[in-house]
Image (cartoon, rainbow, N blue to C red):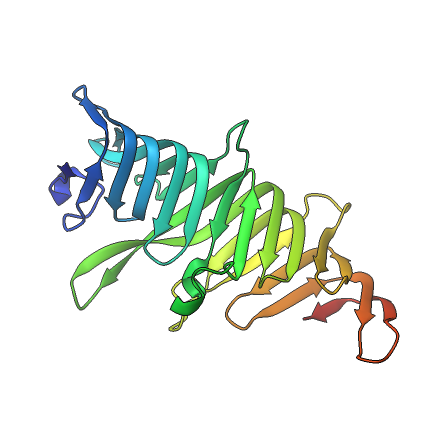
Length: 260
């Protein structure tokens, strides 16, 4: 099934068809409901799920147009820019240019992977950045291609709330209350960005551990995926110095800033 409307009748760009494969499709004059093994080629990327609904919304001119996707059960989205999302519930609103992702009682986590930063030969390994939380909000943006005269939808930023866990570079594990991931323009990576982790109150602090056994806490932790740098604000903790043939030494410290 190919779903495409003229540009003046849809939020989706004219050149971006939504191509769908599903077990069943129903249309009641307003809402299109797809069920079964649903697979969608969409301007956001490749979407697979058990159920997907396409609904009309009102635009700023108060005209009804198709521009709202409601997706449920076993959702897997391969974003065009290289990111990857897994969750159980999702809503994509093209009138507001935003998308909301949630878990379920049995599968509470929303998972974002920036697998697109990896070289092809490392694609099967753990991605350099894995972000988990109870819910995520994506702000979308359309960018035009001057060569092909077409538009594409990209993720401008990601906000993650509640029980935020970040695994970075197969080494560091960071825990926080809130995360904000903002794209940084970079020729080498379409999804390179700055991840800012924070807590809602003054305590408990963000915590970071790694495979070396180091344990740090900080009021805020920023991770730059372009330069591979960690910035910690008012950190404190313990570091372990391991040298071959020598006993392990520990260092307890606190400072105003730390660059890792």
